[in-house]
Image 1 (cartoon, rainbow, N blue to C red):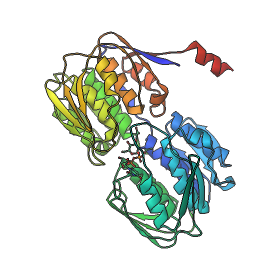
Image 2 (image 1 turned 90 degrees about the vertical axis):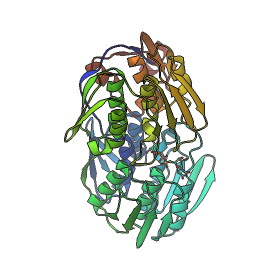
Image 3 (image 1 turned 45 degrees about the horizontal axis):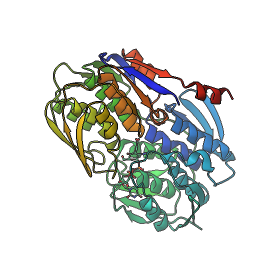
Length: 427
Ligand code: EPU
């Protein structure tokens, strides 16, 4: 398999452009299936998870026309099945949005159970609770889930845990249901709002997205629209962390600074300068990193998807920091890799105690999941010597052109192609 080879020590300096949000795209692409007309989606990130999802819709009959690398026109009118193909849907977590979308479109969906990053149990009971409340029945067989309803009727759903996926999925299923659906204890992430904005532009009537109570008044027809996906909050946060880790000075462009507030606040607490502009942030570090404690929370709290990247910074900070992971059960697996680079961390359940060290050292490491992979890249950029990172397909599920973007900032990073995988590609 291919690897990244990174020689650390270079300060990152310059400008980087952030791509469209992965987790918004993973919901908006399936949401096109609800439309009664052609939709054009702009600012789509060119990453493998999103490419896979577009391929799935195409395999189900949708007309797909790639206008350019980041713009795709999708015609859902020719979709002829509600059966989601097993491959590649089982690989991507976001494939669960096809369930809500196809329930809405044809009151029926047969889909593989979702894949994606492995950090413990990833239940979908809250999605199913919402579908059931809307009048659906479901069954599970051979890693496939079938959900169907004679008709979908608006209802009240209280989510027992704040779940991004369940909030969006129930919203999708309720858009064309009869009457009013209310989701209480809803997730407030920027991509929840982005999906609601997309649906509303098509003619849906969704109110309150971005708060913990979302009201969805069912409508019958959704028209075709052109819609531009928001910038990726986590990709932006990752480059902010990379700039800070390398003593850098980077202007991160095409961002919504409001979405980055919790990340900005932590970086500032650590002594990093963050200057907010209208649609960019400049991250500059010139002194030592200070310790701080980080607790991941649903939005507007500190995002769990930035926990591994901030852990690298805390590894290089003066003093002892505590990280509390309160969203996922098992998101510290990558710490064994970070420890191989000299980080001093002890993990106890959902708590990690990080003793700052003066520097990290190079090592061969692997990307245990998407954000863990991003953290390994940051650690290698800051470390002394040359590191290699394996399992980079994890990283490429969610980061567009990471090598190119980092090289433009002065990083010494390249992809070492595995001759065996070249044969596979040629064949
Ligand atoms: N949960 C349940 N039941 C459910 C759904 C979730 O108990 O039915 C629990 C989960 O076990 C977890 C918590 O609720 O403890 C939050 O899960 P959530 O449903 O919000 O996560 P998700 O929708 O599966 C999305 C992102 C993740 C991100 C989380 C949390 C997508 C495709 N994925 O996952 O992103 O970590 O929200 O913000 O949108 C990533 O991009 O690297 C990534 C993993």
